[in-house]
Length: 227
Ligand SMILES: CSCCC(=O)C(=O)COP(=O)(O)O
Ligand SMILES: [Mg+2]
Image (cartoon, rainbow, N blue to C red; front, side, top):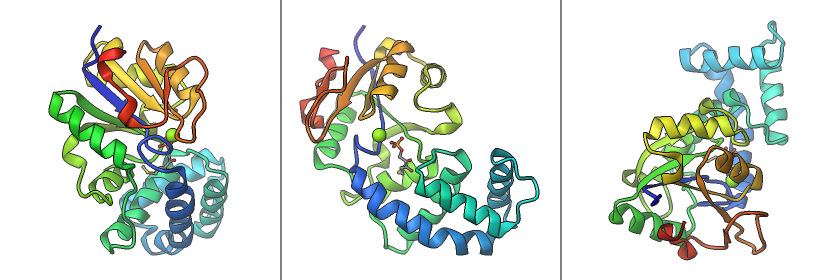
């Protein structure tokens, strides 16, 4: 069945792991405490603070305790939906102030533009919140790439290592799973997408193999017509 849509991961796939770990996460760790203190009663922030209390089973946690929990989650790279939502809000301030510019590999920019022009529908699936995804592509070093994408999916569709998440995304996209090519640098994500019936391609930017999946080191080597 020919590929009609491409669903891509961000960290380690379109964008450098070092940008996420050395720029985005430290920025969030630095600015999140004051952001939470200042906006704790704002409806969208309060909703995420309530979710942290629920997820950590600490119904009485005050704002300072929640900040402590969130900083711990950043340090351990926990893909918790409330942390991801709050990080997106903090990064928005950084992008708006011109302190952050999204990193997207030039080969990814070139291929995404070409595939879009060729008629492939492009989608993103990342543990980063949809807001964070729109920012990294909308305020990228290569300019505003957001017109390339038809839709974005985050952990509200489920964890990235579970096949059911890819089934939900397939339903939302409205194609057969076999018509969707999923790109990622994590073998467990590729395995889950394949279990859901998607075609897969691994990105190993430093070289090597993602066991059991076609693996490339650059978007320039991906030809959707061969999957
Ligand atoms: C959307 S940029 C921030 C990336 C992020 O927070 C993250 O956890 C990366 O997860 P991914 O699923 O893109 O590997
Ligand atoms: Mg990744």
